[in-house]
Image 1 (cartoon, rainbow, N blue to C red):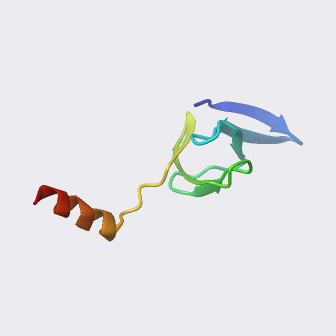
Image 2 (image 1 turned 180 degrees about the vertical axis):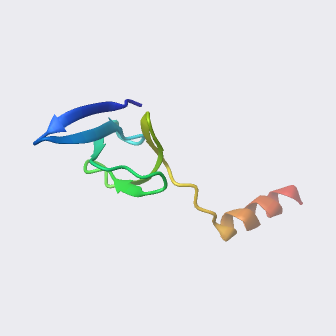
Length: 74
């Protein structure tokens, strides 16, 4: 993933690549933990780093997944 910044009308844009489709995802003022949506594939990602700017799939805790995990142990 890339940490390129560019001038866009006098504003610095942080940009990286979508983990799902490799399209460019850009944000003007990134905040760790904020969610962004890829314009190409419509997937939602969490900002995990600002310098370098990186996004990744959000870590959602799903109780159903936890139940499935316990079933496999039996």
